[in-house]
Amino acid sequence: MDFIFMLTRDDRTIEDALAVLDDAVAVGLRHIGFKDIGATPETLRELTRRIREAGATSYMEVVSTSRAAALHSAAIAAEIGVDRLLGGTEVEATLQVLDGTRTDYFPFPGFPEGHPTKLGGSALEIAAHCTSYLGKGCRGVDLLAYRATAADPLELVRAARNALGQRGELIVAGSVNSFERIEALRAAGADAFTIGSAIFDGSLSPRAGTLRARLEAVVAACEGRAAA
Image (cartoon, rainbow, N blue to C red):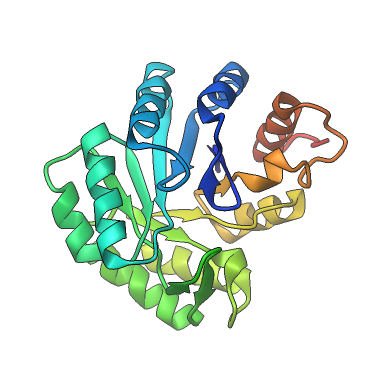
């Protein structure tokens, strides 16, 4: 299971993302991302360039709530060459924007709303969306499991995993803020998870005094080693 480190806090790209990226690269992280709000397109372009230069995979997650803003973010992702675009629900239109680019798409299954985003939808609805999105040409989904308002988070993860099978990748995003949740996601079949705020506020690993130590603790958890 992969750890995707998001250079974000409170669903926004942090102001010093370029500086923090150096710590992530030093730890050896190979999956690094940011949100579509909180930074200029120029900063996002430079982040993407430097992530690629480090040999890592780049991710941008859409948190914009309007159709126009979400598609504008998709166009930015295509233009700057992000490897993977996460989030959004305008699936067919987003795929059209990304057509012919290097960017793979992982939309939100279910019914996300608001900011910070909450997720509505049952396990059956999540599974149906996963199946539909794969059929449309998506690489996988970005599931806001721990933001669910009407279902058990792990039930949603298992439903998505079953629907995606071996063809689609399952990324879990939002409120992954404990090592117990990381282990639960591994057991439920997630391929990857994102963490941003819980790294920066220290809630995930409060005894770790530095950002680098917190990142290393999550890497250890992913590898089944003792975490701080």
